[in-house]
Length: 346
Image (cartoon, rainbow, N blue to C red; front, top):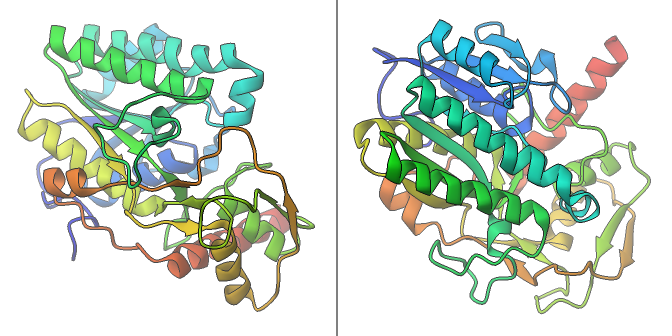
């Protein structure tokens, strides 16, 4: 068993309950599964704007509400003996952030500030934040290290960077430590098909591609064929959502073991694939060719965005289990078929 499969602590004495905000969403629901699998007690807070109640296992206490409701957060913390918060709640669509920046500064920055304030005043000492590689903007050097300049080019990235700054300042002033995990391109689904990307109109490439392969979309738009890459399409570092969830558990253990230390770390594999390589992988998995509509690149899209993951490997001993493009695609396809079965059964 690798260290990414579950934390090094076995299922034994867990010192407190973990609150997962956005735990009914894509990444948050996988973190809930990983926590429960590892023997943690879990409470979930989600407003169900983009999440799904059915995505939260019965073993987790569930509260429908908003992270900005300080009274509710305080009640949940007190009732369940919350000692750590895994914070996934927020808005994540880059083009929407450009069109509606105030929504992102509200959901991702202002409401995170209220949640952090609730944590401090309720005595929650550990906080793990769902950050993003979008805080780097267009990197000068790839793979991207954590000490690269953070110059976001859209409100989504800036709203996440603002929360990272708040966490650093709070950790310096209070009995509190945190880990900000900067995700690259999250993809795939739970290997047991217990959860996956379920939001209608999702923009993640692998989600879009498997929908097209199964006839739920007519084609896939390819934005840009003139990048400085081997085949002219953009290269991204795709990380399996279950490996990402495992990184959160390792971060939790690290924060508990050393409460005076905080972390800001990349979460990626250190290897990228182009848009066409991803589409080819879906074609192989389904034995059919996705219709590709070639178009112009979007403003601000870097040629390549790939993580340098040496720091998280060194800090946590993180060893991914699913760092394989075809495995990620296979799990995404299995989940998409399970979603169709759920729809037909409804």
